[in-house]
Length: 96
Image (cartoon, rainbow, N blue to C red; front, side):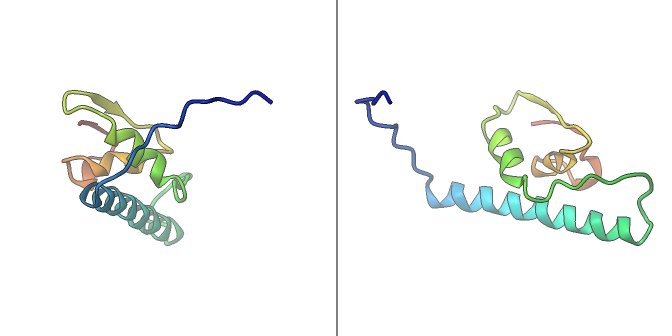
């Protein structure tokens, strides 16, 4: 197996950024749990594909976006839309 002599880049999160990312992941998890509850009660029709366990994907991807970037989220990744500046009621599309 080939070995590299270059060291991996050192990346560290400051505590404020880490706390903000964790808060966003927790918000998505609560949103998904509430969606699951509403689906179980019959308040959401059709099929509900939950995003539980994938919160870091949405938070990591959107944290790399610039303020003028656009983001469109799929049905599966509906929760990523709530971590921007808009309320959870407008989670389908947003400008970041």
